[in-house]
Length: 129
Image (cartoon, rainbow, N blue to C red):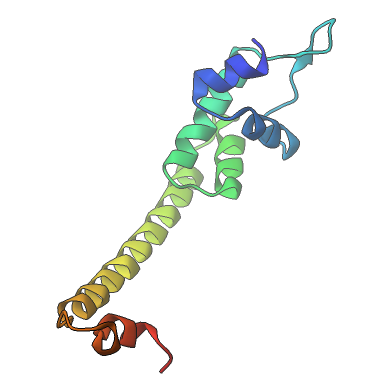
Protein backbone atom coordinates (compact mmCIF):
# COMPACT_ATOMS: atom_id res chain seq x y z
CA UNK A 1 0.00 0.00 0.00
CA UNK A 2 1.07 3.59 -0.57
CA UNK A 3 1.77 6.06 2.22
CA UNK A 4 -1.62 7.76 1.84
CA UNK A 5 -3.41 4.43 2.17
CA UNK A 6 -1.39 3.55 5.27
CA UNK A 7 -2.10 6.98 6.74
CA UNK A 8 -5.84 6.67 6.06
CA UNK A 9 -5.99 3.13 7.45
CA UNK A 10 -4.54 4.32 10.76
CA UNK A 11 -5.99 7.85 10.93
CA UNK A 12 -2.47 9.25 10.81
CA UNK A 13 -1.21 12.20 8.80
CA UNK A 14 1.21 11.40 6.00
CA UNK A 15 3.74 13.78 7.56
CA UNK A 16 3.52 11.84 10.82
CA UNK A 17 4.15 8.55 9.03
CA UNK A 18 7.25 10.07 7.45
CA UNK A 19 8.36 11.43 10.83
CA UNK A 20 7.97 8.00 12.47
CA UNK A 21 10.13 6.56 9.69
CA UNK A 22 12.71 9.31 10.15
CA UNK A 23 13.06 8.67 13.90
CA UNK A 24 13.11 4.90 13.44
CA UNK A 25 9.74 3.92 14.92
CA UNK A 26 8.65 2.58 11.54
CA UNK A 27 11.11 0.59 9.43
CA UNK A 28 11.77 2.00 5.98
CA UNK A 29 9.42 0.46 3.43
CA UNK A 30 10.42 -1.17 0.20
CA UNK A 31 10.27 0.99 -2.92
CA UNK A 32 8.34 0.31 -6.09
CA UNK A 33 9.89 0.57 -9.55
CA UNK A 34 8.47 4.11 -9.64
CA UNK A 35 10.23 4.81 -6.30
CA UNK A 36 7.00 4.99 -4.27
CA UNK A 37 7.05 3.70 -0.72
CA UNK A 38 5.40 0.27 -0.58
CA UNK A 39 4.06 -0.52 2.90
CA UNK A 40 3.05 -3.97 4.02
CA UNK A 41 0.90 -5.48 6.75
CA UNK A 42 3.80 -5.26 9.22
CA UNK A 43 3.88 -1.48 8.75
CA UNK A 44 0.13 -1.29 9.26
CA UNK A 45 0.35 -3.34 12.48
CA UNK A 46 3.29 -1.32 13.80
CA UNK A 47 1.74 2.05 12.98
CA UNK A 48 -1.54 0.94 14.57
CA UNK A 49 0.41 0.02 17.72
CA UNK A 50 2.15 3.40 17.72
CA UNK A 51 -1.12 5.27 17.19
CA UNK A 52 -2.88 3.43 20.02
CA UNK A 53 0.04 3.99 22.38
CA UNK A 54 0.12 7.69 21.48
CA UNK A 55 -3.67 7.91 21.95
CA UNK A 56 -3.10 6.56 25.47
CA UNK A 57 -0.57 9.33 26.05
CA UNK A 58 2.67 7.37 25.96
CA UNK A 59 5.71 9.45 25.00
CA UNK A 60 7.60 8.65 21.83
CA UNK A 61 10.45 7.28 23.93
CA UNK A 62 8.05 5.00 25.82
CA UNK A 63 6.54 3.89 22.50
CA UNK A 64 10.04 3.09 21.25
CA UNK A 65 10.70 0.98 24.35
CA UNK A 66 7.34 -0.78 24.04
CA UNK A 67 7.99 -1.56 20.38
CA UNK A 68 11.44 -2.95 21.19
CA UNK A 69 9.94 -5.12 23.90
CA UNK A 70 7.06 -6.26 21.70
CA UNK A 71 9.51 -7.33 18.99
CA UNK A 72 10.70 -10.17 21.28
CA UNK A 73 7.52 -12.04 22.21
CA UNK A 74 9.37 -14.61 24.35
CA UNK A 75 10.54 -12.23 27.07
CA UNK A 76 8.57 -11.66 30.28
CA UNK A 77 6.29 -8.65 30.32
CA UNK A 78 7.57 -7.02 33.53
CA UNK A 79 9.34 -4.29 31.57
CA UNK A 80 6.15 -3.50 29.65
CA UNK A 81 4.25 -3.41 32.92
CA UNK A 82 6.83 -1.05 34.43
CA UNK A 83 6.51 1.38 31.51
CA UNK A 84 2.72 1.32 31.77
CA UNK A 85 2.79 1.79 35.54
CA UNK A 86 5.17 4.75 35.24
CA UNK A 87 2.84 6.31 32.69
CA UNK A 88 -0.14 5.74 34.99
CA UNK A 89 1.69 7.51 37.83
CA UNK A 90 2.32 10.46 35.49
CA UNK A 91 -1.37 10.53 34.52
CA UNK A 92 -2.44 10.48 38.18
CA UNK A 93 -0.09 13.40 38.90
CA UNK A 94 -1.50 15.38 35.98
CA UNK A 95 -5.07 14.65 37.09
CA UNK A 96 -4.22 15.88 40.59
CA UNK A 97 -2.64 19.03 39.15
CA UNK A 98 -5.68 19.67 36.93
CA UNK A 99 -8.05 19.06 39.85
CA UNK A 100 -6.18 21.62 41.96
CA UNK A 101 -6.20 24.05 39.04
CA UNK A 102 -9.94 23.55 38.57
CA UNK A 103 -10.60 24.12 42.27
CA UNK A 104 -8.60 27.37 42.25
CA UNK A 105 -10.28 28.65 39.09
CA UNK A 106 -13.72 27.75 40.44
CA UNK A 107 -12.92 29.71 43.60
CA UNK A 108 -11.82 32.73 41.58
CA UNK A 109 -14.93 32.59 39.41
CA UNK A 110 -17.08 32.22 42.54
CA UNK A 111 -15.63 35.46 43.91
CA UNK A 112 -16.96 37.41 40.94
CA UNK A 113 -19.38 40.17 41.98
CA UNK A 114 -20.52 40.96 38.41
CA UNK A 115 -19.51 44.59 38.76
CA UNK A 116 -17.15 46.45 36.49
CA UNK A 117 -13.87 45.12 35.14
CA UNK A 118 -12.09 47.55 37.48
CA UNK A 119 -13.57 45.58 40.41
CA UNK A 120 -13.25 42.13 38.77
CA UNK A 121 -11.70 39.49 41.05
CA UNK A 122 -10.77 37.34 38.07
CA UNK A 123 -8.78 40.14 36.44
CA UNK A 124 -7.28 41.00 39.81
CA UNK A 125 -6.20 37.40 40.36
CA UNK A 126 -4.59 37.22 36.91
CA UNK A 127 -2.72 40.49 37.35
CA UNK A 128 0.69 41.00 38.90
CA UNK A 129 0.98 40.29 42.57
